[in-house]
Each structure stands twice: as C-alpha cells, then as structure tokens.
Length: 208
Image 1 (cartoon, rainbow, N blue to C red):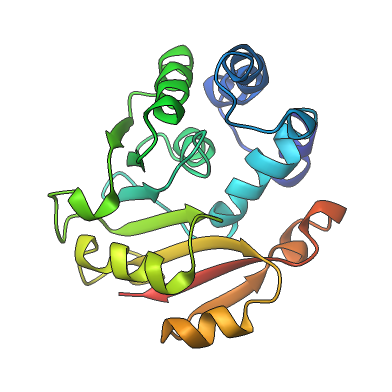
Image 2: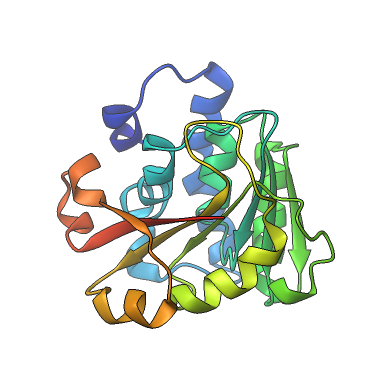
C-alpha cells in the first residue's frame, strides 16, 4: 500500500481505504479461485496495482469517459483505475467466468459502483462506438487488441489525448508493433516508477 502513496497523493479517505482493502479481498478470493500467481500475491501492490496505475500517470479520465478493460483477468488494470477515477464508468470484460466471479466480489467488497462486467468475447460486445478508451494488460498481441477495440471506440476525444487503446506490455515489442500495422506512442513504465519490476515494461497508446 505504501508504494501507491509513494507515487500518488491527494486520495480521499474512501480511496485510501479501498486501496488498503485490496490485498485482503484478493487473498480471500485468490485462495478459492486462482487469478493471481501465489508468488505475485506478496507483491500485489507493485506488480498489479501500481503497474495498472501507469495509465493514470498520463491519461486523465473524467465522468464523461467510458472505459473498456479488455481481458481484465483478476481485474487489472480496471479495478485500480476505477478506484483512482471514481467518477468514470468502467466495463471489465473477460471470457473466463471464474475470473469475473473474483472481479465481481472485489467490486462488491470495495463498493465500486462505477464498475460493470461483461462475460464473453470482446467481439460480442454490442455497444459499438460507445467507449472512449479501451485498456488492457498483457492479454494479446497489439494487432489483435486493436482489431477488437477499434469498432468499440468512438472517434474524438475529451482531453489531451484523443480516444483510443491504451495497453501495458513487456519485453521486446518491435516485431509485435511492426506486425500490428499500428503506430503507437510508447512510454517506458520504469521512467514513471523506477522499480526493479518495471524494467522492460511499456505503455502503448493507439489513437482512434
């Protein structure tokens, strides 16, 4: 929890309580339905929560924005972002029901009334052109993410960045970016959070 406050300030008491409660809730549900590796539970706040909040260092979501989390898994980056931006509406999507079961329980425990879930493939989401941003974390190659996200994201923008896809990835991405046909903006996560865990971690943004 301290690692979050090291890099971010100005949280409300409610937000601080929600972030603080995350580990207990995840430990409870992860013991029943494994969505986070056992070794990662000890570094939940660095490897999962802070990593998710990389997006908040650069992108500002407001009550006018609607965000889709593609392949949310155990709720990342969607849940930390939903705590960080309580006025923004989030839809957390995943094709694996048991993962969404954990997400829904975390949402309920933290009283995150700005989060809904979608069980199924992203391609089956009916709300075309209705999201401002899609976010994702190490789910699929950039080309696939963009193919899934593009029909769901409306053109335009309400802030510094136009609507688009924001994804968190690791490793050598040159071939993946080349294969995607996209021309993303890219940031090194280690520049925001100089922690050992974020070497070779990147944030990519593709404009709609």
